[in-house]
Length: 628
Image 1 (spheres, rainbow, N blue to C red):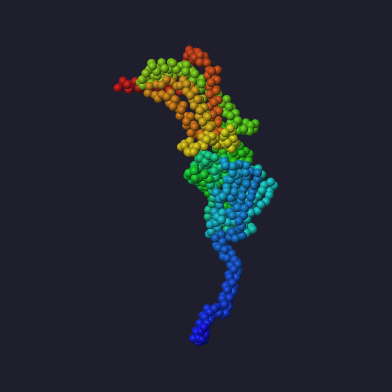
Image 2: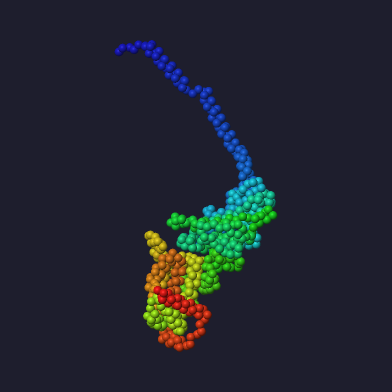
């Protein structure tokens, strides 16, 4: 084996490679001085962060100072309330109503009517989720325009006897402030509300108009959005001693305003003032553009009025009312002299008179004995039909008399045919009727006298709060429509449901009109040449009226359909009794013949004028015929 020799060149190469490797490692290794520098940089960064935090914390005071300066620039003398103000609410409630008052703006941000629910059994709120705003806009002597809704009030709760008082003060100082004072008594819906200022005569600029601005988006509460919104939700106001309402889509300037009320069918939000408002503006805006989409709100109501200063200060005594638009409640002693009961919408003129003086007393009397409101409606219908039965008898008697003399009238038409004998034929017709003691008006007047009752009850049932959410048979709410079948589609003018009470009412009115057709035919004189045949028109009405009623009442209060159903059944029964057991046509014929034998009574001046006018017309007609 060959012995290896020492290779000097290789050894030197190894030494050089090792040296190069050591050199390379040495130049890439962090130097101690560099590591110390890095540590110093890290320490310096931590120190700088600590200084920044302190600056943010110490500058917390600097920023507060800047904030104070900014708020002072914005709010002037009222800046302190913005600086010291805190978010928060105060609850004011009794057995009937619950109010939540916000520190910011000092205004009511929730108003719940406790003993009622919405159509879907949710709590009934008049105000919630920023749907309302109450603001006073005013100028200051340092040329600022401020809004109370942007400023913080300081709350204080106290008691005065049984009354709970919440004082909300917008302070400049302890002796200078604007105050909203709310006072609520047990078992009352009315909330006393005072707006007054103290020590602000040098701060409020009297040359600028001070404006009160109250707006509200009315929540939907009832099952039928269309009925609630289009028929019974209005902005009411009392001006110059008269109550009126504003049609939707309009704005009106009004003076001497005692109160304004935002009505949503059965419930109202009202503001009353001891000092009438002048130059006030009311606006009503439609919010329902599409019933399928816009199902939360009905209308937007707005009221704006300037406030007057007394010796440089505000001093207004007002009242809030958040409660039911119940005639029994609003016509009570607590609301005496306010005329708020007119927002119950019982109808105008004689219709409202009948509801106030007859139907509400009868209804309240029956309500004292019965708890089933369906039975109350039936009993009330019976009472109304019994009272109206003499008119039905009078109308049917006139029909029977006309039936007896009808052959004579037919013979008269044959005796005087043609248009040229129209005047003569009319004169002879009136003469026969007069001798027989028959008047066309004797049949029309009883029917006309029943019309006010029809229209009064048309208002009475859908606006009667006592019927709201009361069930009867298959109807779960007598103030709204009943449903026996939900349609998968919407029928124009009919709806997306089938109501049974309107069907029953339509069937009843069909049979009533069918039975009444012969009576109406007897009341009419035989068709004359050139005149429309009323008999044919009545045949069409027999079918048209029930169909029209079916479509109209399908979305209306089931209590009203129930009333018309029972009313028509009772009328049919009364007519059958009169026809079969009371009216004797033979006796009527004998009486008419007896009347003919009596000497004709002297004509009244009115009758003489009519006869003279008809005679002149007849002579003129004959003269024109000769000229031809």
